[in-house]
Length: 389
Image (cartoon, rainbow, N blue to C red; front, top):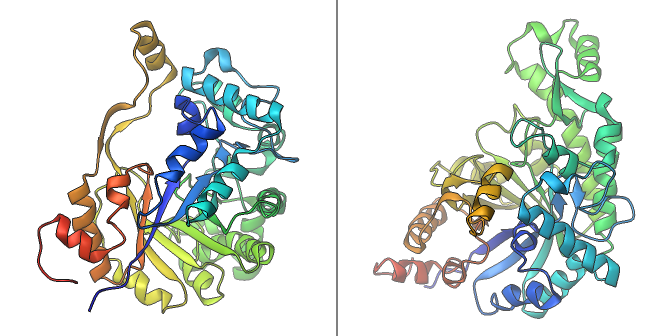
């Protein structure tokens, strides 16, 4: 008997195509989606987070390329293209997310708007131009909401401990519900941490347990439970806003509790419909998915999250300047990707462990893979294997 096809989700970060200039026109937005027609792709995730700015026409969030601190003069060529492309759409009153959603539905796939949980950037990676350009005004005006480390120092990310931060993210979800989308994806691999040793959490813990959590081990079960409370509260809000539409979450299978992500409670309360288990970092990782399938108990679909990039790095502004002087385009430094055979071999492993499908990150236009990946029979044929399951 033929095994039913699996759910395949591919993530388009909503940045790369603008960065290269491929999404500079409506036709450029629609062309790659048209090529999904007839493949096994079930859901296209469209990233709307460019730092804490967005790539859609918003009433409440800054469009990438705008904002008083934006520093495109020191940015990469691709960053300037993103700003130019989005500005051109805005002047014409065209919203890229609407174009993408309508085209996806035309070719028979669902569209989920993907929100990066903590997409703000620090200056350590590429310099001050990066946070100044990618982080919105709200970020700089609310430094008091930054995560506090155990030693009392401040981190770079804003903390979900604070209701004001949760309300800000909920406002984005609420705004996205105006679009013809089928669901929301919350990407918790971009970028932890989400809470810290924040004063409200410390006060709450002392009140309940009579001791300061900073004197305990980081993995003390009581402290982990305390740290998980803010994000669970946020997920409940998201569920109320989204209603009957889909909610998916991509999380790191190793550190989810330490990051304040109580996925067991999310599953028990029906807060997510699709759980994507992955690892932060380069792809090629292997782990046993069965414990998460068992945890889900059939209450939601569980997907293995593939990171397609095995080696390589993003180009810095300095590297891009050198490439520009040499007349070379930016294609990433030393990038190595999963092969078609690798995808199929790995997918059969995850399907045997009970996976309901596969989530692909950083390889959304690999149509050769998408043509077969959701069909276990065709995966086996790619590998020259006999049998139907």
